Image 1: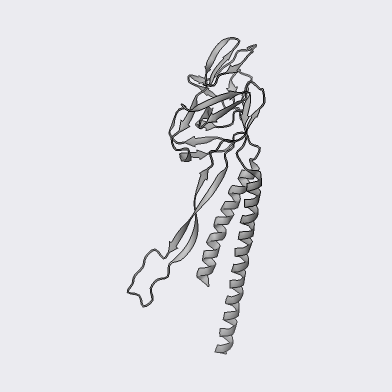
Image 2: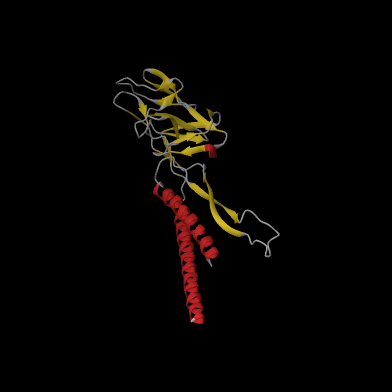
Length: 245
């Protein structure tokens, strides 16, 4: 019975982790450029060591292990805003921003110009161009961003967005504030910049709500099974006690 309870507990722990992932997806359904996550599971066999000299052969037990989290990098819906500082990256590219802890990458193209004239993201992080942060002087107008990321204004060319791609997008790590880090970024070659457009989250709201219900029911089912096993164990102990009396 103890083995059955431990197996059930391992599944409950994995389901709890899965619920956290689903809840995070739902919470970011309206986050610009957000990429949903999925949890992958694998079977963990116990015992690892076996010996056929035992009178009875070892019986392998299958536990549930939440192996890893993968990123769904599929593109989200494109929404036209007509804001000249909004950009969507059509393809695998990421914008590069400068944070207090180093360069980070983002799919969120909702940009702005701060009080110092620096192009920044919504968290105030400078958006990097090929030569560093992109600066605007007071009074500049007619800002245009080309498909290759080249930025121009009434004062002429201002720079080119530092857009990167990753050979293995699963190697990048999710950070807070819709940022990513790690991986081996290289200059983008298959990404097109769309000005006046934003890429919405790729979270499927209906699908995630359905998954949340499924996970909750599975968790409750295992909880009920463990409770029944506890009752059986209690009954067995009582009967054995009566026999010994």
